Length: 88
Image (cartoon, rainbow, N blue to C red):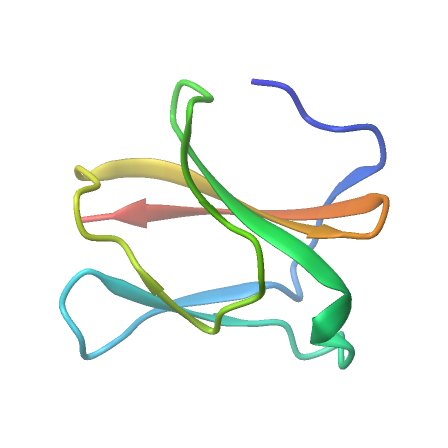
């Protein structure tokens, strides 16, 4: 699993299950300029990239992903913010 230079684990990145099946909601309350987010990447527990979205989305569809541990990575300029979560 390659973590880009400058990657940060941030507690202000919040991931919630939504009422929709197989969806998560992403909140980044301390970062107001979401148009600077260059992409969102989702990695499985062995570090394989399983999803990429080139813009910030607060509602992410997880259809097709199996239960397990995942890492969400937001790419903001030369910085990355990561948060781990579980699909149950």
